[in-house]
Length: 517
Image (cartoon, rainbow, N blue to C red; front, side):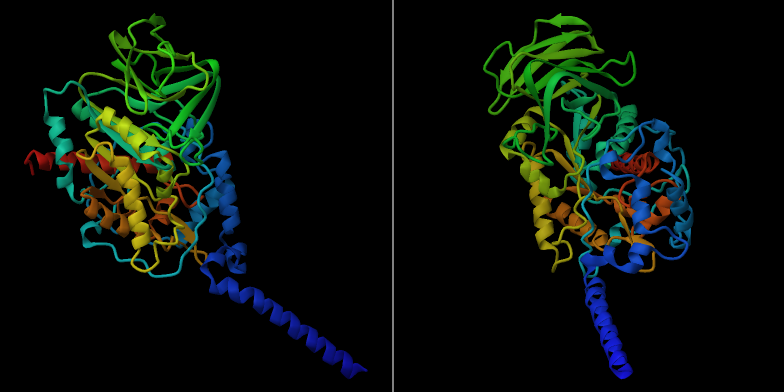
């Protein structure tokens, strides 16, 4: 009897061991199951688990930054503080580098709320080597950065030549496309201020009527809406490709909807020329406009192939305005306010998008508006939500590279002679099996594929990833309060650091263009 019981117990034990092996072997064989491994879920001794880190960062729907502007640069809670402090044990040290000082101090501002980020697919395979042209890492000393030049800077000659012209009828215009890294305006506002200080303030330029903290924001202009509106973006689609220049459309529901706009800083003028980009209308009086509190009767309509452009040349500087929509269902894509000279840096970013999201655009509709806007430079920073793209580590990466190139082609279609600058995504991290923060496997290869795409497209390239320090840089930035504990995004200070680096590179290229050392 006892022998039978012992035999049965051994048999049950073997069954349990076999079942455990059936569960564990796939978890440690498949990279896609990395987050389910017991050593990953529980976390290593002395470091919070990956789940705690995500919780510390807050849910994606709740946004990256707290509502108060001061909170953007402090840890979100006690757990996040512990992660930032203890990660130093696992973080590689930044190599010494010669630095440039003089970085301006900018008060932190609230960033756009982030949509649910793409999960890391952690595709197996070795990352491609980074080219020798961009191996100088950025120093992480507070308030300092090294100069990382733009690769292929000769492709920016049309942009630099436009800055030198004195016979222009309007400012030099820049369109900057991107995802959540750009949508909070942290990078762009820094570049915008630096270049306007150098070349003159051309006004805010184009901004979307559907501006909303869930999708994007601007540091220099404020937008509010009254009445009922539907806000649609290229992230989810659903508007037959009509999203306007900024990838966000505001669709009036009813005939009493309004858009109010004003500068972010009280009393600051927005310019004297105003443009409204709207759906083609059945009525000549579809829009009414008030400027500086007074009705405007001189609004002129120009009909283009796929949209209407409404123009106003105002005799006085515009400091506020209100657009009233009198046609039910009319789509308002955005407004543009500018002065006669200087430069604009126009952020056209949408939270949550990947390079594949550009397919949601009706390419000709977008090109029609781009042709009218006449940018001298188009900047594209996509890839933050591409880290899980299966084609990055597959073979030579051709699938991803060609898809990325198609996306850039759509954005450039309306201005094929404008200069083009591609920016790589910033670093993103993951916990390895030993609990160390390391770069996602796809990062180095994705950056190299985007570099290759820039050469094929005739675009300049700036390596944001290498500026951070390249491989495993996120851990160091997290340690210094420059990155969030979601292991994907940068804090306001981190975005400002990237913006300073890009502005330095652009101004350095301008000096080269003028023949100065």
